[in-house]
Length: 212
Image (cartoon, rainbow, N blue to C red; front, side, top):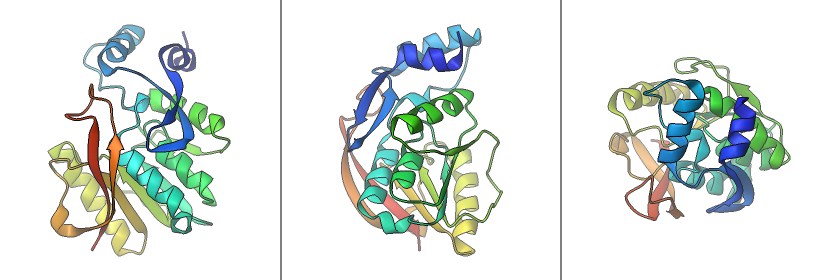
């Protein structure tokens, strides 16, 4: 079975809870899909299928961009750790001139074009690690990237450098442990519906941040 066929067989086309004008191929539960993914690839210990869910930080970023399209209109945009492609799709719908969706997960690389086509937009998909690179993006968007200490430190250092050279850098976060709030200021707050299978509550207080 191809990855595209696997995605289509194990997800449903659903509206995004906090951005219902967008639709994604989403899974209902994480553990069954995780097991099926390991069986499909004949490997154990794979990372969770992040690409199959609309995470709270991404939903908040998508909502923020759709409601304030001037943030990305006519600009080049990078959606880092894109997963399902939700934030990248929102940026394209809001009028960005070019949107790159970056994710090292090969299933994400298959899911993103499927979701983009469903929503009538085109995206460039990058599977290489873009941390510590700079392609001159005008806007860089990152949802739910501060859940693990080492990764958060690397990502925040890189995002801070992009912000310092003039990029608009926005982070969507529902209170992850390693978000450096002392370096950020909140732009907006949302109450985002989530799946209890993934989070500790069905509604997550989620904020959109930028560097001070």
